[in-house]
Length: 243
Image 1 (spheres, rainbow, N blue to C red):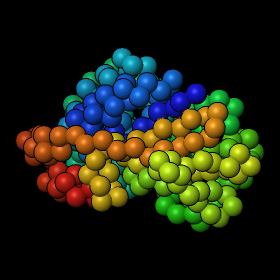
Image 2 (tube, rainbow, N blue to C red; image 1 turned 135 degrees about the vertical axis):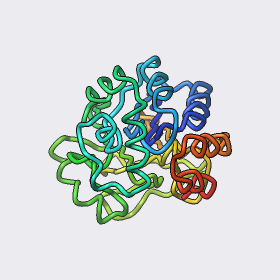
Image 3 (tube, helix red, strand yellow; image 1 turned 90 degrees about the vertical axis):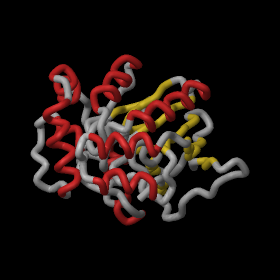
Image 4 (cartoon, helix red, strand yellow; image 1 turned 60 degrees about the vertical axis):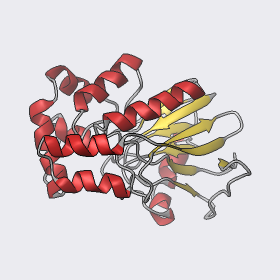
Protein backbone atom coordinates (compact mmCIF):
# COMPACT_ATOMS: atom_id res chain seq x y z
CA UNK A 1 0.00 0.00 0.00
CA UNK A 2 1.21 3.49 -0.86
CA UNK A 3 0.51 5.92 1.97
CA UNK A 4 0.55 9.72 1.63
CA UNK A 5 1.52 11.62 4.79
CA UNK A 6 0.82 15.32 5.31
CA UNK A 7 1.30 17.46 8.40
CA UNK A 8 1.21 21.04 9.69
CA UNK A 9 -1.04 22.54 7.02
CA UNK A 10 -1.60 25.62 9.22
CA UNK A 11 -4.50 27.09 7.25
CA UNK A 12 -2.26 27.63 4.23
CA UNK A 13 -4.73 26.99 1.43
CA UNK A 14 -2.32 27.47 -1.45
CA UNK A 15 0.19 24.97 -0.05
CA UNK A 16 -2.53 22.48 0.87
CA UNK A 17 -4.06 22.55 -2.62
CA UNK A 18 -0.66 22.17 -4.28
CA UNK A 19 0.23 19.13 -2.17
CA UNK A 20 -3.13 17.44 -2.64
CA UNK A 21 -3.00 18.07 -6.38
CA UNK A 22 0.36 16.33 -6.50
CA UNK A 23 -0.95 13.46 -4.37
CA UNK A 24 -3.90 13.07 -6.72
CA UNK A 25 -1.40 12.60 -9.54
CA UNK A 26 0.51 9.99 -7.51
CA UNK A 27 -2.70 8.28 -6.32
CA UNK A 28 -1.73 6.76 -2.96
CA UNK A 29 -4.18 4.27 -1.52
CA UNK A 30 -4.61 6.38 1.60
CA UNK A 31 -3.68 9.85 2.91
CA UNK A 32 -3.30 10.70 6.59
CA UNK A 33 -2.80 14.09 8.25
CA UNK A 34 -0.64 14.45 11.37
CA UNK A 35 -2.35 17.54 12.70
CA UNK A 36 -2.10 21.30 12.97
CA UNK A 37 -4.63 21.85 10.26
CA UNK A 38 -5.20 25.29 11.81
CA UNK A 39 -2.98 28.07 13.14
CA UNK A 40 -0.80 30.77 11.56
CA UNK A 41 -2.54 31.58 8.24
CA UNK A 42 -5.84 32.77 6.82
CA UNK A 43 -7.87 29.86 5.46
CA UNK A 44 -8.70 27.45 8.30
CA UNK A 45 -12.28 26.94 7.13
CA UNK A 46 -11.32 26.16 3.55
CA UNK A 47 -8.53 23.75 4.56
CA UNK A 48 -10.81 21.95 7.02
CA UNK A 49 -13.54 21.67 4.39
CA UNK A 50 -11.12 20.05 1.95
CA UNK A 51 -10.00 17.48 4.51
CA UNK A 52 -13.57 16.73 5.55
CA UNK A 53 -14.80 16.37 1.96
CA UNK A 54 -11.93 13.99 1.16
CA UNK A 55 -12.43 12.10 4.46
CA UNK A 56 -8.72 12.33 5.29
CA UNK A 57 -8.08 11.06 8.84
CA UNK A 58 -6.57 13.78 11.03
CA UNK A 59 -4.66 13.81 14.31
CA UNK A 60 -5.35 16.70 16.69
CA UNK A 61 -2.37 19.08 16.73
CA UNK A 62 -1.45 21.57 19.44
CA UNK A 63 -2.64 24.55 17.36
CA UNK A 64 -5.88 22.69 16.61
CA UNK A 65 -6.44 22.07 20.32
CA UNK A 66 -5.94 25.76 21.05
CA UNK A 67 -8.17 26.98 18.21
CA UNK A 68 -11.06 24.71 19.21
CA UNK A 69 -10.73 25.59 22.89
CA UNK A 70 -9.50 22.30 24.28
CA UNK A 71 -6.27 24.06 25.33
CA UNK A 72 -5.34 27.64 26.05
CA UNK A 73 -2.49 29.20 24.00
CA UNK A 74 -0.50 30.39 27.02
CA UNK A 75 2.72 28.69 25.95
CA UNK A 76 2.63 29.78 22.30
CA UNK A 77 4.77 32.65 21.10
CA UNK A 78 3.15 36.03 20.46
CA UNK A 79 2.74 35.54 16.70
CA UNK A 80 1.16 32.12 17.10
CA UNK A 81 -1.19 33.44 19.78
CA UNK A 82 -2.32 36.25 17.47
CA UNK A 83 -3.22 33.75 14.76
CA UNK A 84 -5.02 31.47 17.21
CA UNK A 85 -7.12 34.33 18.58
CA UNK A 86 -7.99 35.46 15.04
CA UNK A 87 -9.01 31.93 14.09
CA UNK A 88 -11.12 31.46 17.21
CA UNK A 89 -13.25 34.34 15.91
CA UNK A 90 -13.37 33.10 12.32
CA UNK A 91 -13.52 29.28 12.29
CA UNK A 92 -17.04 27.96 11.76
CA UNK A 93 -18.74 26.27 14.71
CA UNK A 94 -19.15 23.03 12.78
CA UNK A 95 -15.41 22.98 12.13
CA UNK A 96 -14.69 23.63 15.81
CA UNK A 97 -16.75 20.54 16.62
CA UNK A 98 -14.87 18.56 13.97
CA UNK A 99 -11.51 19.58 15.44
CA UNK A 100 -12.68 18.53 18.90
CA UNK A 101 -13.47 15.08 17.53
CA UNK A 102 -10.02 14.53 16.01
CA UNK A 103 -8.02 11.54 17.25
CA UNK A 104 -4.98 11.77 19.52
CA UNK A 105 -3.21 9.28 17.25
CA UNK A 106 -3.86 7.21 14.14
CA UNK A 107 -3.09 3.54 13.68
CA UNK A 108 -2.39 2.51 10.08
CA UNK A 109 -2.04 -1.22 9.50
CA UNK A 110 -0.71 -3.11 12.48
CA UNK A 111 2.71 -1.51 12.85
CA UNK A 112 2.34 2.13 11.71
CA UNK A 113 1.41 4.97 14.06
CA UNK A 114 0.65 8.60 13.27
CA UNK A 115 0.97 11.28 15.97
CA UNK A 116 1.41 15.03 16.05
CA UNK A 117 4.26 15.87 18.42
CA UNK A 118 5.37 12.59 19.97
CA UNK A 119 3.68 9.35 21.02
CA UNK A 120 1.38 10.12 23.92
CA UNK A 121 1.96 13.90 23.85
CA UNK A 122 1.03 16.25 21.01
CA UNK A 123 3.07 19.11 22.54
CA UNK A 124 6.42 17.32 22.77
CA UNK A 125 9.06 17.92 20.12
CA UNK A 126 11.21 15.28 18.46
CA UNK A 127 14.08 17.33 17.07
CA UNK A 128 16.95 14.86 17.06
CA UNK A 129 17.86 11.23 17.61
CA UNK A 130 18.13 11.61 21.39
CA UNK A 131 14.60 13.01 21.54
CA UNK A 132 13.29 10.08 19.54
CA UNK A 133 14.93 7.50 21.78
CA UNK A 134 12.78 8.64 24.71
CA UNK A 135 9.81 7.09 22.91
CA UNK A 136 11.23 3.78 21.69
CA UNK A 137 9.70 1.89 24.60
CA UNK A 138 6.32 3.32 23.68
CA UNK A 139 6.69 1.91 20.16
CA UNK A 140 7.82 -1.46 21.48
CA UNK A 141 4.85 -1.71 23.84
CA UNK A 142 2.45 -0.76 21.05
CA UNK A 143 4.21 -3.07 18.55
CA UNK A 144 4.86 -0.13 16.22
CA UNK A 145 7.68 -0.21 13.67
CA UNK A 146 7.21 3.22 12.08
CA UNK A 147 5.91 6.30 13.86
CA UNK A 148 5.08 9.28 11.66
CA UNK A 149 5.09 12.62 13.48
CA UNK A 150 4.91 16.34 12.75
CA UNK A 151 5.10 19.46 14.96
CA UNK A 152 8.77 20.33 14.35
CA UNK A 153 8.18 21.18 10.66
CA UNK A 154 11.54 19.52 9.89
CA UNK A 155 11.82 16.53 7.53
CA UNK A 156 13.72 13.82 9.42
CA UNK A 157 14.21 10.11 10.02
CA UNK A 158 15.51 8.65 13.29
CA UNK A 159 16.13 4.93 13.68
CA UNK A 160 16.52 3.06 16.96
CA UNK A 161 19.93 1.69 15.95
CA UNK A 162 21.51 5.13 15.95
CA UNK A 163 22.13 5.37 12.21
CA UNK A 164 19.69 7.01 9.85
CA UNK A 165 19.00 5.02 6.68
CA UNK A 166 20.83 6.27 3.62
CA UNK A 167 18.92 7.37 0.52
CA UNK A 168 18.93 5.06 -2.47
CA UNK A 169 19.39 6.20 -6.05
CA UNK A 170 16.07 8.08 -6.29
CA UNK A 171 16.29 9.84 -2.94
CA UNK A 172 13.99 7.52 -1.03
CA UNK A 173 14.84 5.52 2.10
CA UNK A 174 14.48 1.78 2.67
CA UNK A 175 13.61 1.10 6.31
CA UNK A 176 15.03 -1.99 7.99
CA UNK A 177 12.15 -4.27 9.03
CA UNK A 178 14.06 -5.17 12.20
CA UNK A 179 14.34 -1.53 13.33
CA UNK A 180 11.91 1.06 14.61
CA UNK A 181 11.72 4.51 13.09
CA UNK A 182 10.42 8.00 13.77
CA UNK A 183 9.71 9.84 10.51
CA UNK A 184 8.68 13.46 10.00
CA UNK A 185 7.51 14.29 6.42
CA UNK A 186 8.01 18.03 6.96
CA UNK A 187 5.38 20.77 6.90
CA UNK A 188 2.87 21.59 4.22
CA UNK A 189 1.95 25.05 5.44
CA UNK A 190 5.09 26.44 7.07
CA UNK A 191 8.34 24.64 6.16
CA UNK A 192 11.28 25.29 8.48
CA UNK A 193 14.19 23.64 6.72
CA UNK A 194 15.19 26.61 4.53
CA UNK A 195 13.11 25.30 1.60
CA UNK A 196 9.96 27.32 0.96
CA UNK A 197 8.26 24.52 -0.99
CA UNK A 198 5.49 22.56 0.73
CA UNK A 199 6.62 19.20 2.09
CA UNK A 200 4.90 15.83 2.33
CA UNK A 201 5.85 12.16 2.45
CA UNK A 202 5.14 8.87 0.71
CA UNK A 203 5.50 5.47 2.34
CA UNK A 204 5.25 2.18 0.46
CA UNK A 205 4.31 -0.27 3.20
CA UNK A 206 5.14 -3.59 1.52
CA UNK A 207 8.77 -2.75 0.81
CA UNK A 208 9.08 -0.18 3.63
CA UNK A 209 10.28 2.63 1.37
CA UNK A 210 9.84 6.25 2.48
CA UNK A 211 10.29 9.27 0.22
CA UNK A 212 10.48 12.97 1.14
CA UNK A 213 8.57 15.05 -1.42
CA UNK A 214 8.32 18.79 -2.18
CA UNK A 215 6.03 20.89 -4.33
CA UNK A 216 6.11 24.60 -5.16
CA UNK A 217 3.05 26.76 -4.43
CA UNK A 218 2.02 30.42 -4.60
CA UNK A 219 3.94 31.64 -1.55
CA UNK A 220 3.40 35.30 -2.40
CA UNK A 221 -0.39 34.83 -2.42
CA UNK A 222 -0.34 33.30 1.06
CA UNK A 223 1.94 36.08 2.30
CA UNK A 224 -0.34 38.78 0.88
CA UNK A 225 -3.45 37.31 2.50
CA UNK A 226 -1.65 37.08 5.84
CA UNK A 227 -0.91 40.80 5.74
CA UNK A 228 -4.37 41.72 4.44
CA UNK A 229 -6.14 40.38 7.53
CA UNK A 230 -3.67 42.01 9.91
CA UNK A 231 -1.79 38.96 11.15
CA UNK A 232 1.83 39.53 12.25
CA UNK A 233 4.08 40.25 9.26
CA UNK A 234 6.69 37.83 10.62
CA UNK A 235 4.31 34.97 9.77
CA UNK A 236 4.29 36.06 6.14
CA UNK A 237 8.00 36.74 5.92
CA UNK A 238 9.08 33.34 7.19
CA UNK A 239 7.26 31.60 4.34
CA UNK A 240 9.62 33.12 1.79
CA UNK A 241 12.64 31.96 3.82
CA UNK A 242 11.28 28.50 4.54
CA UNK A 243 12.27 29.00 8.17
